[in-house]
Amino acid sequence: MQQRFAVSPRETAAMLTAERREHFLIEQLFVAGDITLVYTHYDRMIVGGVVPGGATVALPNPDELKAAYFLERRELGILNIGQPGQVTVDGTTYQLGHQDCLYVGRGSREVQFSGAEARYYVLSAPAHHAYPTTLRTQAEATPLEMGTLETANQRTIYKYIYSEGIQSCQLVMGLTQLKPGSVWNTMPSHTHTRRMEAYLYFNLPENQRVLHLMGEPSETRPLWVSNEQAILSPPWSIHTGCGTSNYAFIWGMAGENLEYTDMDPVGIYDLQ
Ligand SMILES: O=C[C@H](O)[C@@H](O)CC(=O)C(=O)O
Ligand SMILES: [Zn+2]
Image (cartoon, rainbow, N blue to C red; front, top):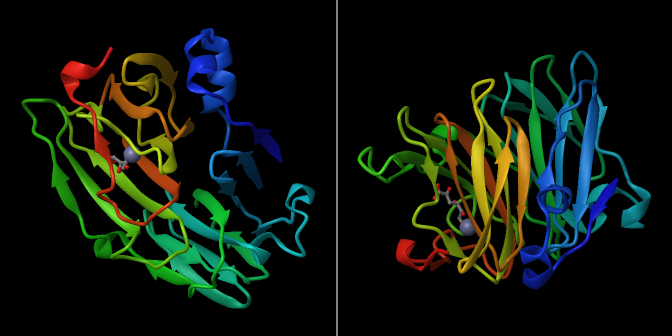
C-alpha cells in the first residue's frame, strides 16, 4: 500500500509542479481485476479504487495496518461510479447501483466486491465505534441544488454519509454533479482545518481536464487532473476546481465532526 505523508503549507508553497503532483494527486486508482489503496497521513484516511472485472476482489489486510483484518479498527465508505455490482460483507450481499453508497462498519471481517462493469471508489478512516453497515442509494441522498449557470457553477450535491444520513465515526462522503455548461466546483471555496478532504474527479469526458486549485487562500497552486484521478486536500488547503467541461466528483472527509455545513468560507476577493 502506497503511503502519503503530511506536508506543511510552507513546504507546499515551495514545491515544483512534479512535487505537488507526487504529494497530492493520485493518478491511478482503478486497475482492472484489482484493488488499489493509498494510505494518507491526513487523518489516516485510506483512499482506494476497486475494479472487479469478471472476478471477486476481497478487501485485503495490508501489513501497514498491523490489524487482524482491515476493518478491525476502521470504517469504510464505498461509492459505485460504474455499472451495478455487489458488495458482500460477512455473508450479506448488497446491490450497489450506479452512484449508490455502502457504509461498512467497524468489525466487519470480510468485504468482497464483484460486478463485471462496476467501479468502486472507497474511503476508510479509523473508527472507535461499530455503526451498522448501511446502504444509501443516490435517490435517497438528499440532493441539494447549488450555484447558478451565470456563474458556471450550477451543481447538485448528494450527501450519503454525514450527520443526517448514514451514521459513522468520522467519515463524511458524498457526490457532486455539475450541470452541462457549469465548470466551477466549490466556488466560493473554503477550508476546514478540522478535517481533511479527498476529491475523486469522474464523468469527465476524454481529453477534458479539471484545473484543481489547492493551497492556502493567499498562496494557491494549480494541479491539472484527468478523469478518475483523486486529489488529497490537507486541512489547511482550499479545494476547488474549474473544468474544460462539466464533470462530477466524490468528496470525502475525516476529522472532527460530521456536519456537512462545517466550512470556513473564503471570499473570492481573498484568493491569491
Ligand atoms: O466540504 C465540502 C466539500 O468541499 C464539497 O462538498 C463541496 C462541493 O461538493 C461543492 O461545493 O461542489
Ligand atoms: Zn471542503
